[in-house]
Image: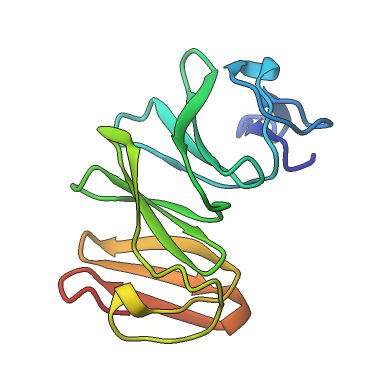
Length: 171
């Protein structure tokens, strides 16, 4: 399987089946199940309604919404960065995403509003302190909320696990 499709694992017999996308072709198109196209899926997260799977469509610079029931894929948020990791911030209606060099967020109720939480210096690095001034490597990948106030980020190329405190807005 390539990074251009979503597969379903059957826990009954340990088999994989195509759920959405085309595993042998990359591109961009919305639509039902295998008519949808992706370009390098990184991560996904299930929203609280358990009906929407948000997908980081890296090369298309988009977050995509896969409706679990209908299997229809549509654009969720258009970005100016290539998304890596995704995490739903509990009780805040926000999806956080990582991208080369930083972090951003999208409000679930208004996905057209995208906010980049870290600066866009065009450089990568490792700098802690205020979130608005923090630097990350070009591969901050996995995001995990420990609580609505604390998120962990695996900063791959910096070989670091970093914690973001949303009370103090620090890394």
